[in-house]
Length: 162
Image (cartoon, rainbow, N blue to C red; front, side, top):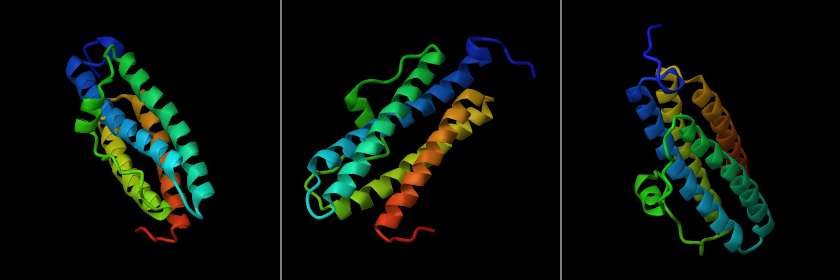
């Protein structure tokens, strides 16, 4: 394979495409992280402990994933997006009011996991197309984790997803 060797052996156009996908994933993960914290802090009712515990677990994992995505962008010599206004504009996940029932919160999170997983698949495809094994490995792990949370939350709601 005759690549022009630049940063990590990727051409500028290849690394730009990968970083763009990573920044979009970063934006969506940041909004998802803040929604998880909001639900964790504000859940009420009989399902308090269930939702409080799972959202804490998820936002702690999310913070680790956010850090890995940002550091992967730095590996390419780029600066990860850090502006909240850009996160909200670029995110496929929307903010949500914290005054929802526990069940609504879980349904909202299930929907967000689907959006985030789809976005991570696009990031994986961009990285794979450009021969970026490091990013594909990182994103594959994140996708597997999101799929597990999707299954667990769907089971909690006794909802079947095809």
